[in-house]
Image (cartoon, rainbow, N blue to C red; front, side, top):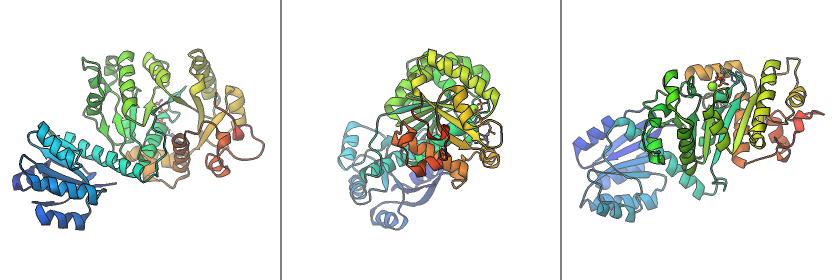
Length: 408
Ligand SMILES: Nc1ncnc2c1ncn2[C@@H]1O[C@H](COP(=O)(O)OP(=O)(O)OP(=O)(O)O)[C@@H](O)[C@H]1O
Ligand SMILES: [Mg+2]
């Protein structure tokens, strides 16, 4: 989804500078105006998502325009840019309902990230006022974990994060696969900074600092990418990860964590801080053997109560059925995702998560269903409607896996 922007400044050179700063394919500059009635007409005709206005001392016309927009066009969000940001200026801006007030940005990335964040936050606010949002606001930290490489952990973490963000939730995706993390590849992100640069900050990071190291994806998901090279993994200590995750959960509705298939100190830190562990498994005997051992470790770490079992690439061709899985790992199955190599690999190669690029595919529908379970805070699939169970592939005759109880 593109973000449509209108620029307003009485100075031609400021308009030119802002235009050059907006160098991002997700942001479209619809037009420019010098203010006054011309600005009103353009806002009326173009219906921009974001209106960026330069604002300085004594420019009361900017304030009255802001007031009009804020109260009459709540879906057009105003950003005020001030050369010198002092308390008086800020107070005047706040008094007319403007709350996105910043100094002139230092870089194009900083500016574009700010525009995207304002757009997503303001849209979420409007949505919540219309009562469409679920009332739950307590942050959820979901670690996607599995006992083997290639199970689909990153695929699920990325697509779930995108789907949750579509529901106007504030979502962070943290790639804790520190050596070979590739969530950025799945999202076609080329990060400037990653968790390893963030970890080198001496002080314990606050949320603003952490967010400055994250990359904003077009879906609205804020991504803290894995280090650019495996040797930087050791710069990231479990203590740093703990304080980063602790801060993230104060700001985001959902923190989704992708992991490597190992119980490293960093992974264990993430598992411990999580409110849910989405444990990915599959229909082959080697995966199931490792899954069983990992679940035993999670038991001894006293984390087993948070576990929800998700069977990925569930196909009805092998000798192993969902019943067998449940029996072998001695844990109920929470959800099942079908196998669709074409959709999954095309999405990966294009860098467009399949819930965006192929929303009608069965694979996307299944992930969408899991996301809606997370949004509803559904703890137990026995509370699902028959339609929901069908979508999750958990309905049919006589299978224990098809009607499992609590995942613990
Ligand atoms: N349901 C699915 N159907 C078909 N292919 C899938 C499915 N889920 C994932 N894949 C494919 O499997 C491959 C591995 O997926 P992914 O990278 O998400 O696994 P992973 O568990 O994160 O691996 P690693 O532990 O190495 O990080 C990718 O090519 C992905 O497109
Ligand atoms: Mg992965």
